[in-house]
Amino acid sequence: MKRKNENYDIMSKNPANWRGIFYYNRKDPRIRVPKQDPRLGWTLNFASPYAYLFIIAIMAIIALSIYLGL
Image (cartoon, rainbow, N blue to C red; front, side, top):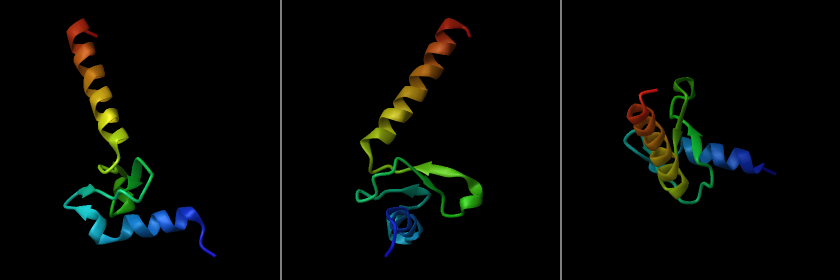
């Protein structure tokens, strides 16, 4: 019997779930997934609304630090 994580790993290796360099899979609940070549690190699951919240939060932190001169 396969574990859940193994199913998710299979999903992230499926080329149909990749749109160029972007991972997009609504069935995968993970926000962060390994890139097609795992040695290159991680990417976001752009089918998750939390990925966009994460990007907006990072941009807000950068903008605020520039505005405050930190």
